[in-house]
Length: 363
Image (cartoon, rainbow, N blue to C red; front, top):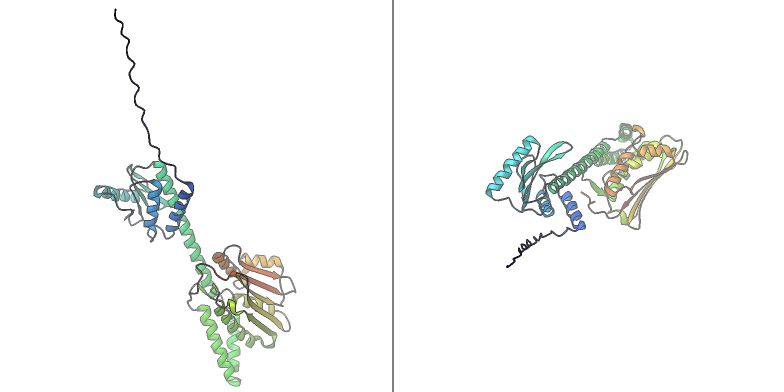
């Protein structure tokens, strides 16, 4: 009797799943930083297409679109085929009206909510994990938030500059014009020269300028202001101005030095009896430009100086907190004003800035 054994079935062939190579974390972080930089001007800015290209590379999809509130996506590298493009436009409109995500892979649209307000839409065409798309949308939102904060900071800096321009002391203007008018008959030539100085002072303080100027222009404004103050205070004010030629061309934020001189005279020299001295100096120290304004006036408690620089010293101090904030905004927290003072010992205010700073150029 023949005996036959059942043959075991052949095992099913193993399925090989091709794994995607893990992305390099440094490359991912660099790409994310690039996306954030490109979105500083928002979804309607010139960098939106480059940002969309970066998102596409991160998600490894066919194409990515970024739409602002106009509803017109900027695609990278190009819009999907005709039917896909029409469907994408419909999804964008749906998201703009509902502020909720729409569609499903391979075509997905997500709202971009900045501070709970709709700013635009991210559209992804291709096979990508939903979690990855959500993370990409969250990163774009953070980039847009940062852009808005930077724009707000810039607007605040401009507003502070406008406020500083408007912070001309009425007391000083009245005294200067009174002195000039008193000299019209007795010393007409000096009266004319002082009137020209006064016109220069007003023009520099109030006229529209770029964001930056040069040390030379700031020192010219200081000398004009001091000429008027010497006419007002007479022998009560003695001034020395020393500036090294190598720092004259250094770019500085507009109107950061004259307020320091005005404070030295207004709070240091005017209240004291007798003759007061003011020394204004500009010099190079290595890669830095150091400018100091020193007076031998009344001085103050160092704690009060800290309050003034923090913006809590009241309205009696002309622009010091304003100048300090603008210097730190431009050059970083290591820079700004340093105030050395004590009651009865006068005051010395020091400005230290780089002689060369990328992006800081006279307007």
